[in-house]
Image (cartoon, rainbow, N blue to C red; front, side):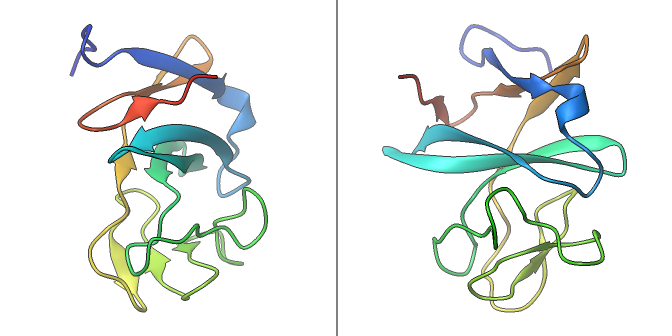
Length: 126
């Protein structure tokens, strides 16, 4: 899917800043009229991004700043509720959750990870 004027790309970080099952890179978006935190991670070589909002209760998920993976490095975990999510799809795999995490499209090119505004997501610009 190519970007268009309605869906511009926004530079997020250098590709090397996202390490497999490592720390996330956080950023802000406007979703449903509210400023929300979002995060990008790398899992099995691919970059993924989601709203930092548990599908169980709309609370931020990281158990420490930018830490979303469980001890195994295999699952994203909500620190508040213990819900477990698939890092490649955002789908809930166990625990209290209703649905999936809200995915944000990433594009990686020339050593830079960009996120793409889509649907109701808009960049938070200062």
